[in-house]
Image 1 (tube, helix red, strand yellow):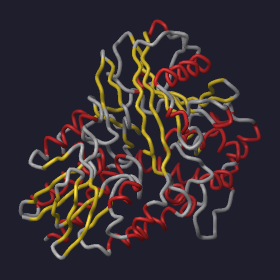
Image 2 (cartoon, one colour; image 1 turned 180 degrees about the horizontal axis):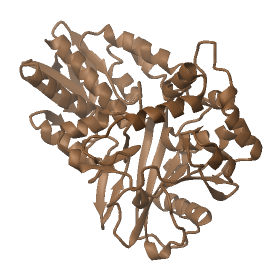
Image 3 (cartoon, rainbow, N blue to C red; image 1 turned 90 degrees about the horizontal axis):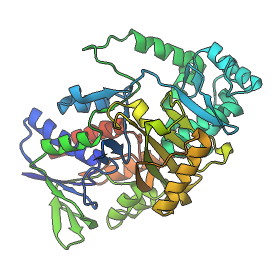
Length: 470
């Protein structure tokens, strides 16, 4: 029997174990002895779902993109198809804070690309010159020189500075917690690069994609919106994965202190002194943690992994009695441009976005702090962080009420940053890893930070492992 050790028990590691078992069974590859090692007490990585006093709270990610099909496909394979949950509205309203007031993101703006001109023209968010500049994107020539550029450079070139400051920048901060002037457009948003090259315009490219998506028939009649989740929260996916890999040995609260290879494969020394022998090793941890694990194996690989930067964030979920909230909360939430000088990056009106997230007489709001520009806020104490968020909600939404629940989750060095040159770094990391037969590295640090990207990479990794072990 072949031994496989997976280091990291987040969605990447768990999905890799699941696909290993499924692919081995489908291909009659014989049984595998799989061990998952994770430093945390609870398995699941950044996915933490809590049900408290009728509130369903997600500590980390709370959804996945439907246009990236891998997470939905995994849910269906796990038997969770009937548990998939669409947003309450197909495309809910999003607001942007500008000059201290919330302005509706114009209808038809998808991510940062305008697809309808009239809503943009009548929007209070942008100045007239900013609107005209966005519309002129249709006539901006495509980039002819090869090479990467920052998201900021890309947006300023195609849509203008105001579009970056008021739309692209805050929307990106809410998702990637990054700095647009360091983020790689090629690695962070490759679809935009493809649109520019294939259509000569983001507007033309987005309209073509919308037409294509509209033409695709939907099976089963169940609603599919841009953002999807599971009725019981993403923790339900973790629990189901664990139920499908019951015979996998899971070592929680355990750290790999040293890794060495020999003629028979690999030996992993654990912090308790035990040694695991493996024919193949999959490391699904943050790049800086992976760097420490392989340092006795390959100094150059260690060095290159250490070049991927991370930022820290925190989520603060706050529940209020509905009768105490005067704001209509008629949308999914709001994002905050850096120029506003606020201490929160964004707020999601969770109970307006998803069904079953709060008692009928309550609302749930999830705020995001930290990121590339305010990481120090993550280290504040609970009471101070809670008060900061309450002050922000009072000034932005007019909420004076006392919360009925507050849960804070800190994610230190949790968000990998795909800075300019990321693709080249990842290619070199893969080449260095491939030099070690039976060693595989996966996770959000490399080719996509979302859950769907992680699932896709996990399945590809499982195929590679079986190819070597066969």
